[in-house]
Image: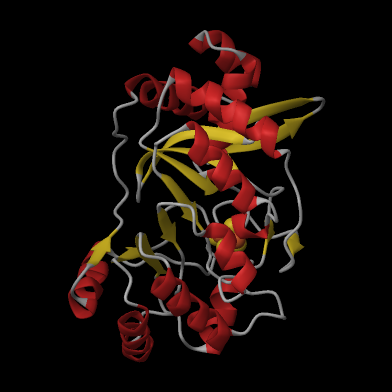
Length: 305
Ligand code: SF4
């Protein structure tokens, strides 16, 4: 599968072209709400995972055909676990002015060297869902070497040093971190971190575990009012953006898999696009949790959830 995926409609960023920086489910967390499934490699030490020159070349080809609203360092694991992320950011900045964003769980930003590598992006979007260890452990099932106080300090320190966009995601789960005590703790921490925006999220796609339950829109609205200021709800949005061709293709792929399981070749033939381009789009939809991969005999099929 390609390292570049999408473009996919992002609830937070518009039409986003993603770069997957780590092997699938290599992460420092194992969140119960993860749309990609359970973490298989729970680690905190960054490594080299991808060929930077090849990735940048691939990116250049894709954006020359259909420029997205943003390029996002994200994917099916934690991107700051890629040791070469700083070099990749510098190389991308040499070839395009399209805003570059980093979708991170924020758990490693307390490490100075990790933070330094990420400073070249335009927007950092870290996550904080609880200030209580017990709840944080329940939601994120972090690597045992991680410490919540240190993580929160890292989020604050990154904000202090990073003068560009800083959007803090709060993932809210029914019955787990939506109590008054939880919200009061979050409000205080958010005040200390001082992000440009607070983005409230909940479960919108099938999660890794069935106990990850969504909050209602009404409850999200209440919490938004309680947190106040620059808080927004990241509501599931209809596909939008300037890349009309990519949008309609993503929709057509979704319509195909909704009707019956299909292969990459089925999609590639129906949409009259190359196999490589099809794989790139399918991967984006899989990472967003919109479609599923299933093996049947020697063939891989794609289905809706
Ligand atoms: S949601 Fe993000 S941080 Fe959590 S396990 Fe999945 S990839 Fe890792």
